[in-house]
Image (cartoon, rainbow, N blue to C red; front, side, top):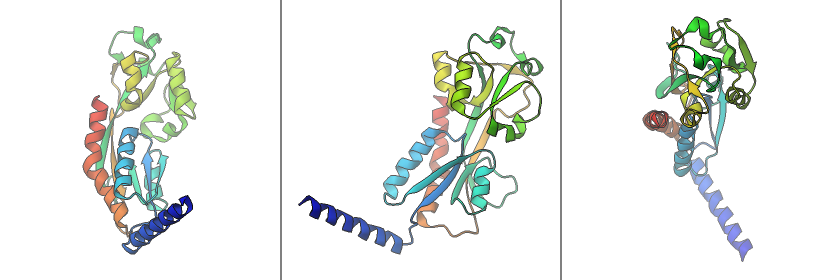
Length: 233
């Protein structure tokens, strides 16, 4: 009996997949997102997509800076979420604005200085960046004392231990700030951006199926409000 039920279920799934393909729905949708894109937004995106297209697998990869755009341009990915391209030809819509915050452990020497802390003084202290961050213009001016790490977990562990300071996405350290494990620094004269916009992008000259178009529209219309509410919490 169980064998018959399983066989019937498989036949129904095959029929549904065939009908989906007949309607022009993709066999999968791929998206490359910047590592700054908040996980809570990705989770909401996945839940909504699964509800709308339960039989379409979604492939997600992450990248830094222009990597998602390159993956979209060379056809590796159907969609990308990355900082907007000025003068680019991609179809795009802003989906999130990520706030950065410089942080240290409560016992770090920087917390003993009068505020706001001059940028030149800040840069005399050890700074922790990810190797991927070194590709970013604001992170690669060659000034100050830098340690490059290859993963975010190690950097967080060092920060919590009082080793160095770092500028991180607010969503990444919000729990640590609330719990007092890390404290935010007040910096005077910082020249880098304190916020970065992210946009969902789709190639205008490549035919997209309904699932890809739906995911683009979903991100364009709903994710920014979700990211903002999460960042304010």
